[in-house]
Amino acid sequence: MRLSSNWPAVNDIYRDKYVVFMDILGFKNLVSAADQQPAHRNTLLSILTLLKHTAAANPHCGLHLSQFSDCIILSADHSPQGLRDLLMSVDNIVSNLLQRNILLRGGMEVGGVHHDDDFVYGMGVNKAHELQCTKPHDPCILVSGEVCNDMKASGFGHYIEFDQTKDPPRAFLHYLLQYATYDPLTPMPGMEVLDQPAARIIRLMSHRLRVDSGDVLEKAQWFQAYWNRTVAASGVFGRIEASHENPP
Image 1 (cartoon, helix red, strand yellow):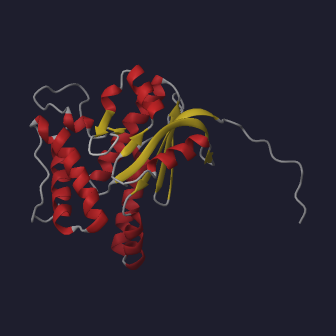
Image 2 (cartoon, rainbow, N blue to C red):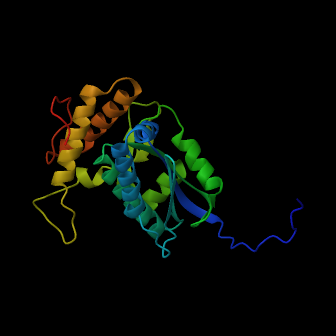
Image 3 (cartoon, rainbow, N blue to C red):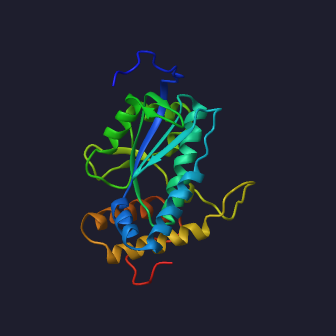
């Protein structure tokens, strides 16, 4: 069959944006379980539905989300507002999935990207994907040097955390910041109450430390160290330790 040379017109929106590429850890096991039992299909669909409704598209800052299989791609304008909204969206996604016992890993970069309801491609996506593939595969969202500089310049430097166990230390997105800085004694308008979400995360992760093994256990241990160092250290929420309690 001969292809027509008259290609349809395309709205080219390829431009520099902040891009986050994330993997849902353990997704293969979720799909395998869903293939065998309808109850697990409902669980998987509820997770994907939650993800779909967590980060709404925002044309004012170019915020867009795409999800396919175990991959999540978020992008936003290369501007302070775009950076802010992207950080808030990643925070919400990670927090919501943590309460479903789901860990993520990813990378955050700057680069050219075309991202709309139909397509997503570009060097920004490639760079973010390459960054998230950096070993070891801990449940963190690595941040490039360019993004770190932008975060500091835009007043978001407090969203940068460093993994000092690696040489050299790796910069990653401090997605537990809202828990680490939570102060229930000083409520503010619109402040989310995090007591129950935090308690659920502690119970789920404590249970995983007892029942998981191999690479899966190592990921739970990495998260345990991150939580205890940044969140539990503030004294508001408890520590994550191996527990014999059943998860909620």
